[in-house]
Length: 411
Ligand code: 17E
Ligand code: FE2
Image (tube, rainbow, N blue to C red; front, side, top):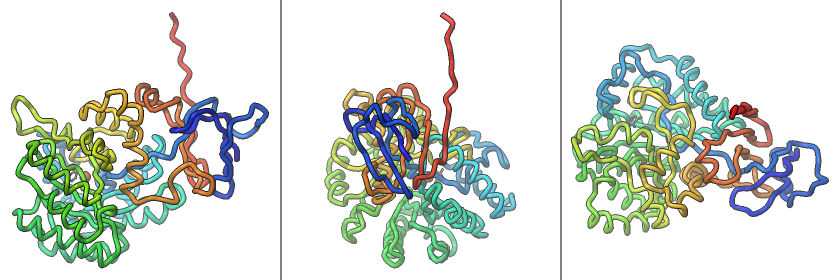
């Protein structure tokens, strides 16, 4: 298959790209006489978007049994608790909701997804559902699962056993929620347990960490130092770290040395956090977002995710990472030209690092033919126009093709 006359993100000029048997076979400068195949008309090809953080077991449950009226994280957690204890959780129904969400995400250019799954939902229908879906979707969308203890590991009866059971069922990564444990000591013990489990199962770590506005919530330092000491930094993600938006600068500058040394990755969910955090503040009201720009400028890896699509935590969302990116660059003030001109990193290559993707990711001869074609020419144009994904190809198979609407303005 030939894609002719495309730009490639990060390179000058126009290209003809060929792939065969699921791999890129040639990338050459565009020649007019190369006809046939798909005419990209100068639009930009890039590696697919990566969704590093979503809860597919909860998607599309907003309003059942009721909406989150306060808009806080804690009402989200209690509403989800009501959902899981009053609604029959059935594998087929969870898969149906998750599949609907994956189709939306695919439409917006996502091909790699890391999803959390609540392992304190003791029927384990969620784990079963997402493990089945992970297998069924292989070759279309690649899914990694994370054992996520919504009610805590130490603070939930049998929490450690539930985590082990999930890992035995084939879950990809070990999760956690140290800031939500009953005490800081429980939080610290949970972090040790998380890394013990990760070593035992040779798994990546992806922990909800300090998802609050409490400047005293400092689980991140414990997560980073444990990752450092165990040599697990590149395989570790600290998710949310909202409290870092409230840390004082003196503490933060000390913390950054450890964060850099540890080599851990970060995830931020700006639409979710701007909605959930700052709720207990009057004015001035904090943003509740981690230091995306500062971490990035210090050479650390930050990837943006959605967290939710219409669930007890966040009532809207449609699977579109460009929308998340738009919120992220505004709230983090990454709208200076330098940051703006490569902002798509935050939803693509940075997410690939969080997921430890390698062979599957990047437009290079010999690599898997995974790419999207965007209706725009560069990062600034794409984020400005919220450009549509007009083609999404995974392992050489077209999974989405979109013909944008033609609009004519009559003046
Ligand atoms: N659970 C949690 O603790 N935090 C979140 N943002 C979501 C679920 C969506
Ligand atoms: Fe989350």
